[in-house]
Image 1 (tube, protein in one colour):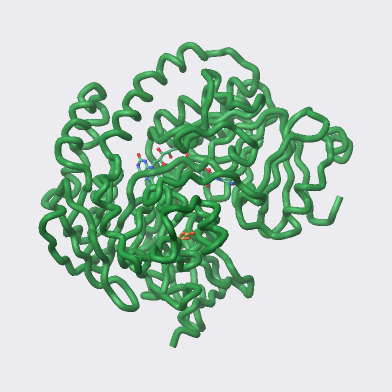
Image 2 (cartoon, rainbow over the protein chains, first blue to last red; image 1 turned 90 degrees about the horizontal axis):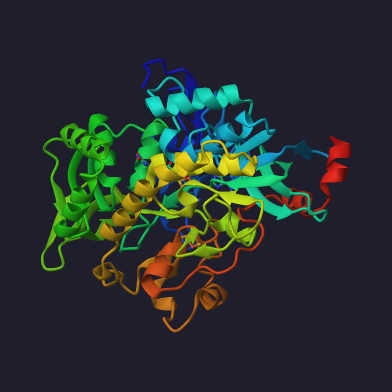
Length: 88
Length: 438
Ligand SMILES: Cc1cc2nc3c(=O)[nH]c(=O)nc-3n(C[C@H](O)[C@H](O)[C@H](O)COP(=O)(O)OP(=O)(O)OC[C@H]3O[C@@H](n4cnc5c(N)ncnc54)[C@H](O)[C@@H]3O)c2cc1C
Ligand code: FES
Ligand code: FES
């Protein structure tokens, strides 16, 4: 892990600063956003497999819905919308 | 040709850039074949070698990556293969991938499928709570930059991945409070005796033990429940007689690995016991389609490399080193068979699933809505189990373990894809027209 925190993404309107190479899933979990989506019956869900298999980490990235957060690398300015926003 | 569709023509197309796919592509390219590798990951390396830029990479990985780079093989990262089929002209195969929301078609005379493995998940009450990850899943998240420092972690399930992952997480500052291996002590000891014939693996084991010195490793123990409201708060473990509750932030739970056979199935390659059947050239039942690595059975990176080398050489029509490689396969395959036997999930794991336990997490199908007299197809039809976004990749193995059902046929696409990608792949052009277009 490097100590240069140079990548900034925006998750649900909140700025998250992470090391280069961090996946969006890791960035969200690291910021305490453990529920990234709601299941079809409204249960909280978060990343399970970490490698693109389970689709539990899907979020909206730069207005494109249904992206697997564990397969996307954080880049400056990237905007993420999770289920956290409409959970409450 | 529709806009946004890229066409590439190669001799050998490799799907998967893990150890198996890298070895296959390297050998094929070194034999003078135009070789293209596709992988849906952002980085090469598969499940064991994938890494973040700048982090330490194992020597063997570095060696193969360098050799791959010199070989002249081309790699397409971030490309999810959603379809593969023989061209109507009979001169090869057309592979369709989705890359940055665009369809991408690659034609090859021979195909090497090195799609690797994924974790096997067996349901238990509470396994859908945030904070519950796979075992390799937690390791993947760590590699992808997630900090586990200071977290109370329980690692449970089965297989040789539990210990190295415990060591890695402990090394990253996690408080690994328990490693629970469901297999009985005698099976694990039996496996350790098996390891004696492979001293280098044993050394690896010792290094791992040193890495998480003080962490309790228990055999014959499994998780019967995970509890929490919005996220995981505690787990209950049992040995079948007594139970114990452990407060924790993270539970890593998985029951070994299973081969990824969706793409081989789509190509109608023979699959037996959940693994792709190959001959001693690594060729599948479908001529021109080869398979290497954990898609042919779980056996570790070393076996994947040797199979990959063989598959790459065979796909390139080369006989170099083939005898030598076959000789190296034998002990590795024996070891793999022993491992599978030692870490088979115990029958009691079926008893902890309650009527309310979710068995298909994509569609929130609970055990009580499934009737044991059904087959996998009926379960899909009546409850949507297996019809969610993961297309049964998670619940397929769960249902197989609980009910003995086998996933049957694979419908196109083998991964969720954009409609434009599917249409690009089904517009069946022969390689000749592709060559002219290229
Ligand atoms: C989550 C996980 C963690 C693991 N951790 C360890 C470990 O710490 N130590 C260890 O010794 N072993 C580990 N293993 C086992 C190890 O992965 C294997 O032994 C080895 O990597 C097998 O190599 P392979 O080439 O067969 O497959 P893999 O390494 O699995 O590579 C397969 C590749 O194919 C790609 N792929 C699959 N389907 C498609 C598709 N449709 N389109 C595009 N690309 C596709 C995948 O993205 C992947 O990169 C782990 C396995 C898993 C599943
Ligand atoms: S965590 Fe499973 S697909 Fe992302
Ligand atoms: S878990 Fe059943 S379809 Fe994904």
